[in-house]
Length: 604
Image (cartoon, rainbow, N blue to C red; front, top):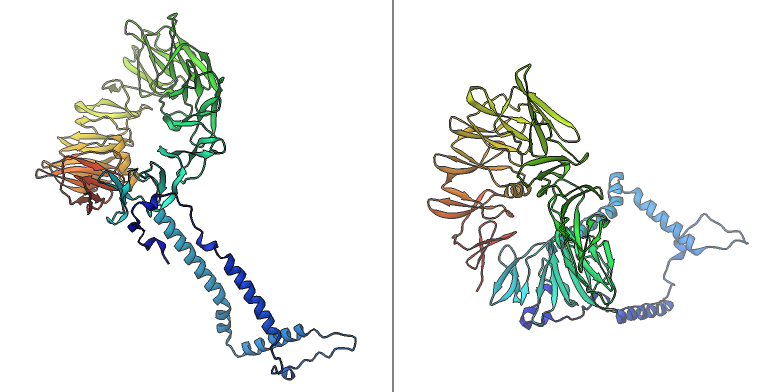
């Protein structure tokens, strides 16, 4: 019997109460006792059975026991039963015997497969992300067909994340529901529940009082409930206080840094992580009450002594130390140590931490490029022109003997490439490539090795994007080139519009397509990196309205519509200004639509 079908919704909000679950399958103690009594009664009854009608005389045996032998009645019956089976099997064809012998195995396999199938179906149903809706200031949930699985009875509720959502009832108690809209964690089990990134911070009453802990996205405990307070910070880190200890833990619940204070001290702790690109090591400023230090956020190791000075966090592991003595300085941290420290510059920054190059800006606005390995200034030779971009140095010097400009591309670690007789457009690399002048007043590209990537020349070029493509143009017709110099989209279109990096990657993650917008005959369409038109050029314009989901807004003859770029389908709905797009549904003026464009619900 499916108890989910019982009409519990008629009981108002009482199903929100934290009732203890009843284990229906294990309330059979009396049944077990009764079964035992029945078995005992059956044994007593069997004692009175009359065996006189059993034809023992029909059984024959070649075994004649000696006078000293004892006859094993059970063995006689076993032998006789085996004889009967053998005689019966002699009359059965060999192929049929094999089939009969295989039947138990087939039956067992079928039952096993069926059990796994049912389990997987139930598991998938639990992991479904339902659609949240609001009515009369209450929250409920529907599925993608618009079927109401939970009426609007919760005082608050979150969107689903990996099959679960947090809800609250009128008592302000929290619970977690699953993809069937059933209570996965009942009301009252936890005093507080909230989701931060991919971890739940929860609190409950223990023997030591109200304590907090972490759960993962599958609701499994990653910590014990021993913390007085846990709060989320950046980069997946959590701040905690535990008795007289404060510190940092990672998303796995591992305490990576701890600091003990006395009972009289305040318990204020904060963390700011340095934004970093393309590096494994991250560092952060930890501030405990009025003192600060710098730690490795992976290991928790202190790499700068505690100080009352102010520590300002800059990008790529650069920190600015400011004190009352005005002995202000910049420091750069790598491999758990200070690799560079200076008071010589008004500003100091690192654009690519792997380049081992820092950029120092003086009071007169002149620039030094600093080799972080030797701590020397790179651009000291005034006869050489230096430019820094995209993590590499580009030096150029005129060779008067050959009357040519010689270029070198390098970092403090190695020489990357060189070239001559090539004139750069702006002496900079963008995402691995630099524009150059080519024959007949046209343009081309070189890579960081100094190699020209294509034999073709173009009237105009765009910079390469971070995802590896650039626009090209000949005779006012545009196309797209990749880093190997291949034209993935021919120069046949009036305009090419590159998507922003986030939206491009969202589409690629959704359906593995790399998409671009193109215009022809004053109409816009969408094409992929194989040159295949995915959306016909019939639209007035396109507008990216979300970077998180594969939905784009288009205008057709003045009317706005939405297009699902996962299935490349128009969504038939009336578009208003107020559009809210979520992971698996769209809300327009209190009307709910799925990603197929079907109107599934209207909130009252």
